[in-house]
Image (cartoon, rainbow, N blue to C red; front, side, top):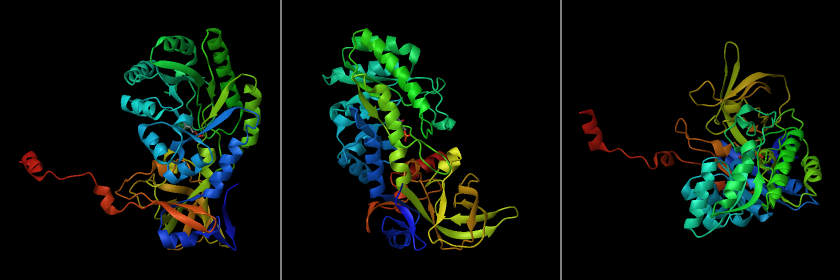
Length: 423
Ligand SMILES: *Cc1c(COP(=O)(O)O)cnc(C)c1O
């Protein structure tokens, strides 16, 4: 359930008509609904009522400071994957002691930053990272809290680019190596073992791969405890899917029930790292039609939003529903909704049945709250869109639109140097 609904034929974000936002803030524009974010967070957190657990929102899904602040204020910890994300989380007022740090390529400066902030746990993904972490912690006269991210080799049955828990994927340590690495880690002076972790993929629409992974982790926990290690946390990662089109993902309550059943007697605090399921359907991209044109085999709708603003259709052939902001009756015919970028791969939808459109019409690209703005780029020297957060009948611009002058910041023309280079 989300709060982007038609009222009298006009699409609203909560109580704000999208036409008003387009006029006052311009397009393309990301629009997030505070009520939807809150609802999704509380539904997810509430799905584990009888279990010691911690929800660490996956910052990479939508890292706008206002979104992070809203979720942190509801009690969310954070799952971060870079020093930049840690800086965002801290700037947004998130509690580092409720936050975990994942990622295959953590560098020393990022590790130091996280140790100084006092994060809950590092999810370590390689043997070399264990050594660097121990060394960095010792330099700061600390012991780093550690889980090893294992690769449980389960098939999440999702898009290959967002499968992460297969043995051919770059993530985590192989299950077979985990025990030995844990024993080695236990002897490294700068480390303190706290838990086990995994993250098997994103946009999962079944519970069974989570259960398979969980059982493998629980076996590992048993083995490690048998070796005398103390394991307090089991981090199951994120990955629960959402409805973009016809998917039928389990409701968080169902997911929570099944997972809780498996872990309830294990004496562990469960950590969850949801991203998409919290933010995905809490945002849209609002875009305006510039031109329409009839090709020889297709009709095109050229809009002011493009692959630099929202790359998922181009990158993973992802489906995003497209709704006209003003509901129209009449016959629909298949159209490609494309952006101004000079790439054939620049489309938001292909062969999509849409009613007749005219220049100036507004379209809402639905389910654009996760993995959309965060992947935006400046390709074709286009400024990234503004972002607004709506609450009831009010809204706030939570990121201003990049101006053309912003696009050349940091660049310089060393005239004499170039003159010499070409002479
Ligand atoms: C991306 C990611 C998540 C969030 O995945 P969702 O599918 O958005 O829930 C959680 N944990 C890790 C380690 C990730 O890389």
